Image (cartoon, rainbow, N blue to C red; front, side):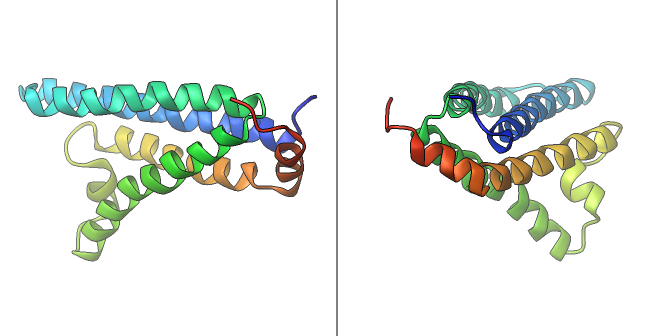
Length: 148
């Protein structure tokens, strides 16, 4: 059975969001290299992020194939936990008086590219979440048997 447009668009939005996460990680490594600060902090961040990106890719693959459990996992892992981990620290910094650029993009020459990619990342997560719960997507996942 072909997935409805809402599911196909959600798949695209999830893919864009995860790709933005990968680009953000690359920018963070470049920033650390430019500041001669490439060390264990960067390595530990990559050790967390790279498996998350891989798991997200697997979930997106299964979501696109109509697996209800993947939709649930994407919701919890990326829509709730992932978005919270991006938005809450930035919101706290902004409420403390920091500018949007600093809160989401940091400082230095990588601030603007990071901000742009981060905003696309957040937009992708929000769009994907909204799309995967559209009525047509709900009907699609309701028709699909629960399978692993």
